[in-house]
Length: 93
Image 1 (cartoon, rainbow, N blue to C red):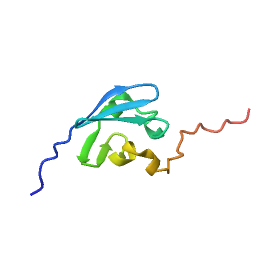
Image 2: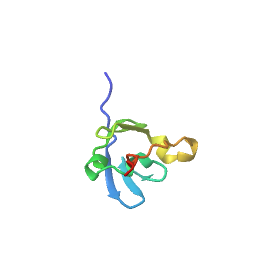
Image 3: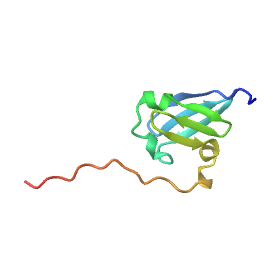
């Protein structure tokens, strides 16, 4: 029978450039420049984070999964989503 997950995770600070997570006793910065899909998230969406395993974080309201290693060492994971919100094309007058 699997053991209970004892790693707790919580958002401790949200700022202009990113937000901080407390994972167990470790603090991690999630920079909006390195993880742009969090930039437009609401506070409630950012705070709703789950630790699903020792290297697996999940934001259910945003449907975002992240490896803890990708936060610790973003240079090891150079592919970053180019997704941006697009405006509707302007209609001609």
